[in-house]
Image (cartoon, rainbow, N blue to C red; front, side):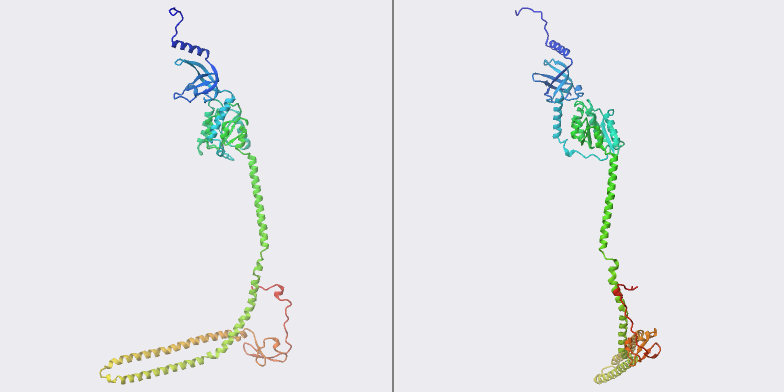
Length: 516
């Protein structure tokens, strides 16, 4: 049997591998395979990706070429259940078949939610969703940047709502809000707004709104991409997320400074209502004016209460004014009493200050001075004689000129002292005379004769006593009235009259004449 010939065609390994390859590619030129990604380690250095799709019973190798990998909406991730679209082929060197993937999509909403939750936990662990990272929105932004599609209803709703509430300067950065390039365009828009210079030709926004209408999780998946989340996290401008409807949750909602349920709600969060703001400002102004009036009224009441407890200005000086008036009233009598006392003192010492007495004292002093000079001359002569007798034994040995000089000097000193003494006494007498003249003038100025010269009279009774009051005389008494020039004899004819006392004094009536 081993030597028996057969007519079966013999294939080489390459031929059978090529035949299998053509058969597989022709039969399975376009397939969709559902499985779990396993063994994914990222892109190879060549840019291609290699991994395995598996299920409970089998596995198949998968490859994503470099050009296809860049167009994938969902990138391969380890453990993710996906539906891969591509074609089957074989790899002749290892006799293995594999699928060349052109598109990947998660295997249903459950897979997408699992991927979303895994990505959320990762970013949460990095602290990108921390509450302390949230910033306050500006109360009244001058410029608002909007990242959305320029042709959808979203931008029209935002602009319309902003115009109704508070017209603002809006800058729109157009992007695709779904599809393969959605994430990259949104990321570039956020970074682009932050790159504007504050004083550049295009004003830098004070607030950003990232908006999109509602849709499925696949439609909104671009706003779940990690690049978009990180762009919002590093934005220096506060961001409002307005993606989808109120029930739609994306990762950008967690990282944004404020989440709006709808794009219209984002516009309401961005600016206040202008009419309400004007009313609020007017209300504050009214309240401020009322508060100012209340404060002024309160201060006025307090001032009135304080002023009521203070004394009147006239009361503060009334006591001092009364004391001044009383002192003024006593001043005249005090001056007259002092004048009288000084006049009596002058009369008492006037006898001792007579010019004749002073002249006699001066003559006595002159006589004493002359006597002293005479005694001095005699004394000098006597001493000279004694000295001459005492020194006569020495006369022979002394020259006459030696004694003549001291004697002549002593004589000259004595004569000079005598000459100075007489003018000194004269000056003393003149000074005393001038002082006496001054006292006489003072006495004359305060003398009662000067008072008589002004029209007053001095009344004396028969014994020469001064009549001070009307009770000091009685009818029939003889009086002498001294006037400035001479005296007048008079007799009291009628009974003296006593002036009546005032009904009420000034002090009792509470009135008082002004000093001025």
